Image 1 (cartoon, one colour):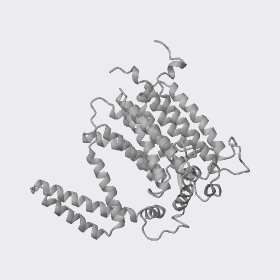
Image 2 (tube, helix red, strand yellow):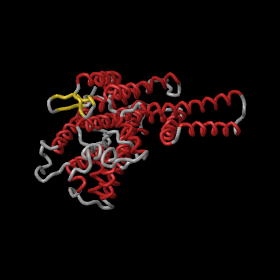
Image 3 (cartoon, one colour):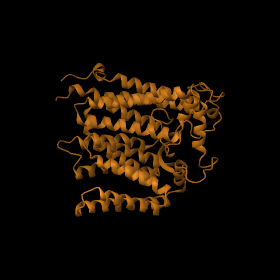
Image 4 (cartoon, helix red, strand yellow):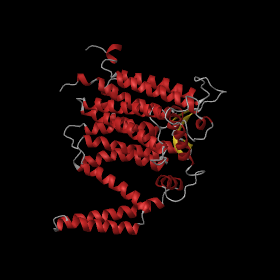
Length: 423
């Protein structure tokens, strides 16, 4: 059997995807530099500053990417469940042995070095889902298989939310539901989810009594246009009862939320008067920064909102503000298109796979990146609640950069193997 050489390792690698990744990482690094730039510390390689530290994270991320490409592709399929179990244990242990940062105990600290296991749980969950769904004769449409699949997703979601109080990281795991529709999951689950979101919003904006009456009227009108037999009436009554229960449940959940979570929802929905010096400050300053950039932007390193720290977390969760202010609409569009180009490339690569495992994993990668992109930019411009989700390959931080790199390059490695798989 012929041994793999350095040439074989990089054979069939999708270099377009690698190029898009490198572009995003470098452009992100430039924006981190701009976000925390000051005239006293201006050398981009200064490791006492965040941009210098990010340079180290980038170099190590490239090294991790190389290691992933060197490892045999069969490793990821063989050890998918083991990797998932290891990180489940890690996210359970971190609240007890980790360090508390910003009200959340979700980091392992080793001196100045910190790792957030929940970030890596994303690629581990993706591997486990791909492994389970690629087993011969598994049909996602079967209730038992649907339940097991949802357990793979919900287990890390619940642990991260309950034990670590990381709402943003927990919600990201919802993205893994979308690849399931490519594999045959009934669209009814998606419709049910959309209905739940609509009812959640309406329950917060409209008095529950009026909403109950509206649901009753809607069910009555629907009954006029269906074949009225016992089965159909029972189904319609069940739908009405479920809707009313969801409305009541929404009020209960909202009343038992933490105050800062209520505030974020109120700001998003425009409920009541929002104090722009307190709960509405972040989003308002973000809008000002992006709007002030105009069409062409103020110029690189010329952003006043950025330079004078008017925007909180401008190098992490609100990094897109720096793009909007200094690069303007054109620069913002370029960054979004670059992110979308990578996501669309991953989808294209997923569809050309002969391996079911690789296709499912690829759709998982695309879904996670798209979820991060839409929610991060959405919360920056006031269309989504502020839940602390980083912009892929842009936001400052080693854990997020490493996790996105691992997530992506495992897929690149699996894709490079596609021509060797027999039909």
